Structures are given as C-alpha cells and as structure tokens.
Length: 396
Image 1: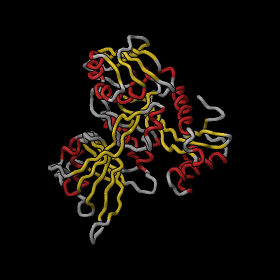
Image 2 (image 1 turned 90 degrees about the vertical axis):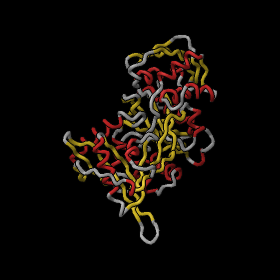
Image 3 (image 1 turned 90 degrees about the horizontal axis):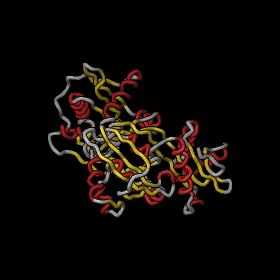
C-alpha cells in the first residue's frame, strides 16, 4: 500500500473536519449531511486524502466491488466523492491524489477502477477513458397495462435480502458492464439518502424471480399532482416475472404518469411494450482505468466460440508495470496473458479501456487516433472484444 505522509486516510478529527468542509463545498451539500456521509465512509476505511504543507488539499472515496464483464465478475475499485479544497484548485492536487491512489489500488491487487466523471480531462490524464454508458428510461405508466397476474407479488421483507441479492446477481451477470454490488452500493439501493425505497418481490414456483425498489415523489401536473415512480432497481429473471412487474407498475397509472429507471440502451423490458411509448436518453458515460493490464485481461470473460492471439504494445506513464508488450491469448472463453510478443497493436492504457469493455471497436479507436495496428490485428481484436454494449444501472 502506498500510504505516505502526503497521502492516506484521515489521521485525526482535524483532517476529518477538513474532508467534511471540502465535501460540503464540492457538492453543495448541507454541512450536517456531508458530515454524516464522510464519517460513515471513514468508519468503513474508504476515505483517502492528499496533504500539502500539512493541510488537506484533496479527497476521494474508494468503493471495493466488482463488475460483470463477459459474464465474469472482475474485482473493481469504484471512485466517488472526489473533491479539492478551493484554495488548492488548479494546482494539480487531484492529479497527485490519483497518482497515489492508483498505485495503492494496484498494489492491493485490483485490476480495474471505474468512476463517473465530473470532468474528463483530469481522469484522462491519469489513464481513465469512457468505457460504457448509463441510460435514463422514461415510460408512461398507462403503457404498462400487461395482463399478467399469474405470479405472486408482495411487499419485500427483511428475510428476503439474501434471495434478492442472489436474484440480482443472476440477472446482472448477464448484463455486460453491470456491477457485482458490495454493501456500499446495496445501501444506496435500499436506503437512498433523503428518500424512502419501497421493495416488492415476485415469486414463482422456483422461488423469487424478480423484484423492484421504487421511490415515490410528487410532480405538479395541472390541478392534480401525480406521482413519479423512480425505480432504484428493477430485476426480472423470467418472462413471467417481467410481465408481472410491469403490470404492477402499470396498476399505478391512476396515481402516477412517469415511471423512471436506469440501465442500458438494450433494456429488455421495453420489448414487452405495445408501442414505443418510452424515452431513452443518455445519462452519463462512465470511465474505466486498467490498473493491471495482465490481470484485467485474464479476469474478464471472453466469447467461448472464439480463439485468437493479440500482440499489444501498451504505454502507461503512471503505472510503469503496465508498460510494454503483452500477448493476449484467448481460447475456450478464457484468456492468458504473457509478456513479450511483437507489439503489433500500439495504444495507451487509456485507449485500452474502451477496447477492453467493448465500448469502442478497434477501428473506431484507430479513427480517433488512439490506436495503431495492422489489418490482421484489427480483425482479431474486433472479434475478441465484440459483444453487447457495456452499460450500468448504478451511479456511485
């Protein structure tokens, strides 16, 4: 772990108070709310900060979890709560903070890091690049009149938690780019700050087949305000469960007009609607950083029917162990990576991120000037990294 005098977790109440102040100003939060969040994250060991002349200059929150890529769960470090003290803005504090953080997380053994950017230039400087998307989905409740009541739907109970976790994991493992959630993300789903999430489950002969967490809010519409149903999570593992959940949401049409949730552009539930009575819009692109090129390539899943070898030449000016030539060999849905090879595909580790997730094709990266390769390497990479567009439901 790279914990130095300049970098590490808060050491005392004075530094913790400084993190609270930075968080309050960076995110325009009420001080009491910021303090609650910061103290909770500090108790879990999630805070890191950069010191300059003995003062706290910048801070971030790290989130240990994983991400489903190619059907396999890849350990991943999420990043949130990045803030810089106003007097240190524009002086490179965030860049120095991330240099320390990335080295610490690589030393810890994490192959990947993912974040949602407030600004892209900073994160691109330290090796992150756009690697997937989060879409906002709006459906009119009146369009959800599906005639499905064959499965039992009931309010969620505390005893359902393990079954709900397992149901989500079965579903998310087939959604390229979705999180393999840890406690931090599950708390945000179940107990969102300043909101109440109501949980409901759908049961069939095989047990729990789907669930929804919904948040109700009022939106003024004419003389009679109507509810907006924001779905913190919506999961169906069978067609019957999908229809039952949509029917349940449609049963709210006298109370609510807009039903909102997040996911990918390939949201399967939209295929059940009779008409295109929905809106799908980009919320944000998330960014990925490969901390360990070899481990990351070996950890994700690969198309089981394909085999091939790709000779990479990777540049990384922050993590020198990623620098150099690698041979990626894929067979039987798994990969092996070794040092060496001919380096026929040349790219920065930043450009490797969208190739790795399948967000951009090798030819798109070549067109953007982010990759150089011969024709044979482009074809091999195009086949190996092909697959569904990477997406994510959760914000962090």
